[in-house]
Image (tube, rainbow, N blue to C red; front, side, top):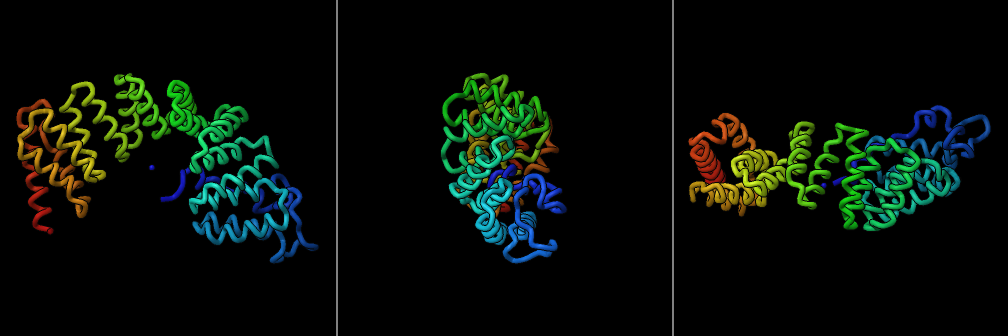
Length: 319
């Protein structure tokens, strides 16, 4: 679910480093006599690199931060910012190496351990990611994002029960963390707890109604519960948000299960095979879908059929 995880993007440079670069985390940075900046001053290079990073230029930031680290390799935040830049470039092994150095220099920083864990996870080292993320939450027991990503790593390793416990901690400390609610629902589905999963997916959609994965997951959960009308609702919303072939196929399958008109089902599957130009059609379909009667009304499937016919006719006209 592009750029690396949001947490690796959004870690800001501590503001004091912008005004007092020789104190706190940057203690030990060499400042030239009189405080004048110089091209070989690690603090100046670091601040320039951090600025480039915040402006969305990880390539330029990497070059500057590498020079800062070469001059003064003993400042943890230099390595941490370099790790961020590397992660944004999807150089996750190099990012993990930078964060490894950051946590060695500052072993009490929960944020460094957290970022280290994210980079390790992205590089495919799930076991080491779990260790780093466990250290992050040990240092900061209120770190919702760390619990969330620890849950993801644990689920990836096959420990779904522990994953659920960590997702629950994540949403306890940050109830607005929509992705964590969604992942918690996925873990419940994996355990066969469909009722609990439905509640999680519904909460995810309340928090982030534009998240396609949540509509997909909730639709699948409804199918498992035999609530096919509700599933059709979710899959219609899904294709409006993300009209990908697989999503049209899910809607077609749900219509077929519900006993929908064969023509409607076939239209869905034909749309599923079409790879381009469906975003606007999906949005139009959703807007019109909102005007349909409730799902238990006998006109529901007729309305769906008419919308799909119009969508397919428009697609053929565009072609």
